[in-house]
Length: 282
Image (cartoon, rainbow, N blue to C red; front, side, top):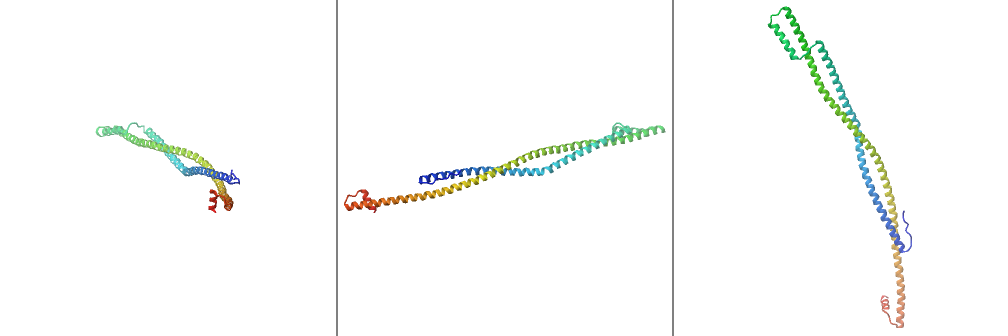
């Protein structure tokens, strides 16, 4: 609360001046304190706004990135399913061929049997019926050999598919874990984003409060400073008046003394040192 200085003599004016100087100094000190706090709030507010904008940028791009990861993961899973369906189809086809021809063994063994039987036809003296029977067996073995070769090709494709399935599964898992980490990070970013939004509103309110207090402090400072200025002028004026009054009194006393000295001179009285000083000033 602004102290209203009292009016009165020089002593009272000096007291008023001291009071006003204290008010000016105190108001200035408080203003500096408020300005320092406002600067701290401004710094925190600026940093929070920069972080707020950065998070907003990340959140704005988060959805397209999430959708892209989901799409890649789903495409990889779809490819895995397609490979598995092909594996099942090849397994069924291979089993069907093997059952149809009733074949067992590998290509090398069956080829050796066929070559042995053909050599027998060429080198041994067989009856017509024996040769026909042997040729029939050779042809059946050749058909079985082709079936085994087809089954071998299916087996090779199955092995290739197993490798591809593992590779694509790994890719799908990579995309899935990337998606989980992305969602987790964006969830944390969103919580931080909301907290920053609240913090910024609080800081803005604090800043407005300090601006208002600084304005009030400026007003009090200007009022006290103006009163101090007026009081200093009043003090100077009163000092001049006092000095004038003192000079007039001294002048009157001097004149009175001069009259006394002149009277002593007329009467022939002895003059004192003070009298001589007065006489010299005349």
